[in-house]
Length: 255
Image (cartoon, rainbow, N blue to C red; front, side):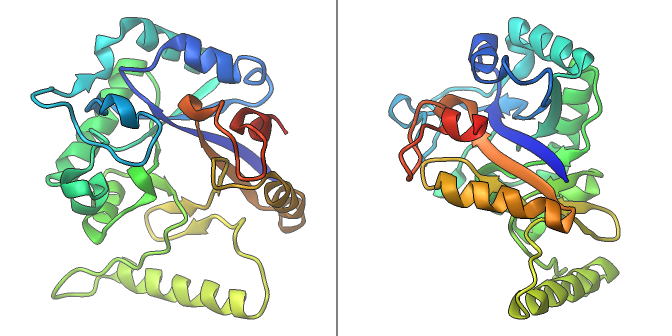
């Protein structure tokens, strides 16, 4: 079994102390994958930990490089093997209250630019994409895969080009059918990394307010039996919030 911690939302507004507080005790043994947004649009103050997001009026995106302390911290963490870095959108805002990679414009250019920007700034390779709000449209998929990135997400979406069907779309449909049949037969596929023609997709388990720790632990115990990949998705800025089962998110991650 492979075990991965996926932590979302590191950006220019993140302080090294926040990440150190959450993961400093464990990243010597369990490296953490930080999903980084390169050009973050700030959230409204009362929705920092909520679901609704929109930029401040007149605010420009905050580039990761503007937080030099964080950049040096991330570079050091990568060099020490404490941290891995994934791309988490471009601005991570919600145009028309919809996820960035569902309705955003110019996604192909932004995805490639975001990947190259983080690689150059942090001196590391970026091979994975974590969708903002865990949502990808067909155009979102095309942008991410076109940039040569793998995906961590639970969304099983068969990509179709309007007016034509490409070979990868046919493979997607076949894979979706295969996993659908496995579920009907009672076989588990939730730990399987799915390999398509030009990318891989790994599922994840959410450690957040809607989650329940006993269910999470049961899934963790089952994963080695399938030789699977166990990815937990969480947010450093929500570590002190409580899960549905009563534990804090910090306690859920450490458990």
